[in-house]
Length: 431
Ligand code: FIX
Ligand code: ZN
Image (cartoon, rainbow, N blue to C red; front, side):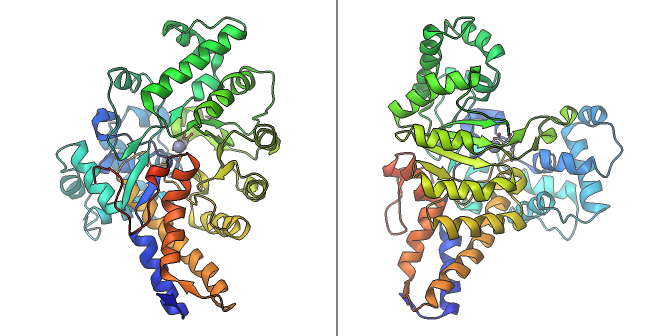
């Protein structure tokens, strides 16, 4: 269909975006067969660390006392303070409402107990996963998989493999950001690293990486990095990236994902809610991209002030995939600014969003909110093109939307078999 009017254009874009199944390239969710480390349900939605941070502003409860409450008591305090005593207009509060609405709750009752009954009815993880992936129109989920996590490691060591809709990402923060402690654990696991960094240590850390790559089949290796991240750097992190991560990444074709700008635990008592951010230098990225042209890098940054530099850097290096409006950027006002900036500087060669979902049911709101915003921005961009007299075609717009929400990612990580357009049969997947 050739699009002749802006009304036709708006409808075609809205339909294409809503119909497009999403590959969510960064989440903290797990395949249903990973057991209770997969979180879902009303109380998990309400005790998301974003809301823990927000409830502390309206409550004089001591953080230590908050953590002594049961999950249900924490949820009820958050519901009382952030939803009943004050209107839930923050993005994280609105998110809870959108997810509850999507799961069929009648929000006019404001009856939290009835929501638990109605929504937490799924018989098990697999049933809730099928239900939520369908409601959110997400068909592939990339997890965050940390071999240093004591709950998760045994699941992999037992030979568990994720369902077809779930894909591993090898997360190595403890290795890169806390090697002084992690090296002792590597030794416990049979990796004979030395006290000082030497060839044997490099070989053993490389063996650790390749063992976990074999076990997980990760789509990328990932780390979150502080705003002070420097490279090259004569430090544990600098040496492991130089001697292990980059060679393994190049040899296997598995990209290195860096999430840069997080200041961990500025308020430690808040736990995950206690992290902050700061602007980072772009020089480490400039160095990595130019010095390692055969390596692939996936990057998101946490400071709003880094976004323009990152987008311009994307114009210089095609071995850089820019993704998502991460964490404190995942709010309409900033998603709007970042996405327009990226489309205007990089066209459609980005992955505009990921969910970072920690609770399965959040997929419903994270993607409903983002798709509405991205569809509106796409309309403005295509309408500008239409006004030049350039004819637009509905199938081409659907192609572009499939690239943004799915194919750009799979192509960049080298999994062409996962690339799909709306008239192709689905790759083998449970859904
Ligand atoms: O490092 C990360 O993967 C961050 O996304 C998380 O640590 C953070 O807590 C989060 O979930 C943000 O949305
Ligand atoms: Zn995350």
